[in-house]
Length: 342
Image (cartoon, rainbow, N blue to C red; front, side):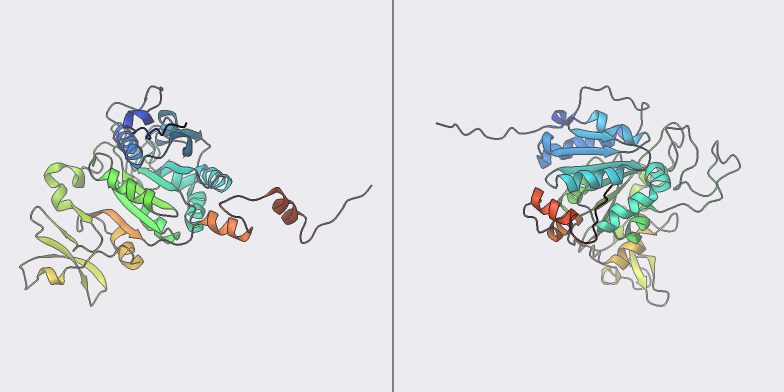
């Protein structure tokens, strides 16, 4: 007689590998690692069905510290490897970890295609606005004027907005959080996991050595309420310690503007409601820049569509993500084929 055994409840420690975590003391990556491990335990995905894939950079050490399957790939090419893994075995839960340098510089082309194809995986982009592993050169997300070994007189290049990039590439899920937001970040990670298709999450991450406190203007407790806006689907876009400020659409300029409730007859009815299915609104929110505007945090856009692997296997006439040998042979021998004879 078979005895039914209830599945073991997982904890964050169950997803920690036996490798010594070796980031700089105080690095924001520690907080992200902890949040991811907690999230996986709550989701309950088995170890043997979870894969972490990374490229090159500080963030890309992630697979070593996870008690799951993983690949530490080459610079910028993690999206291609992750796509192959997901296509080969759609049942796997695939997480892609990258940084602003790895993902948006040499890997920008590959990141674009995994998003537009809508491969069913979670993409975590750690944004510290600097190259940390190679000793502090300015990165694609560094602000104009950033002084670094590769820009001693200050960077002159306009920075890339990761969320705007993702939306422009056709991402169907785009969100933001912060390394130290240990109550908020796991919720965003769960929402990304629940989304069917490519999920893109930008995580503001502090590099204590080469770009310390670059985000302190909106992450410090003393100023966070006035400098962040937590977006939630169906709720008004309010912020401030007493929710005294809000975002309103200016009818003349068709642009977002900050207003104060109670001034000039402004009431809560004038404040925009967040609609995460509205790509135009999501793009406007992603483009907001301080200090004139608060930094939007949360799920900016979520509008599911059929994922890539479902489409691929559907074209092959496969069921349950499996293709028979006969099907593959027939496909390979179909169309324009020829024989080479001696």
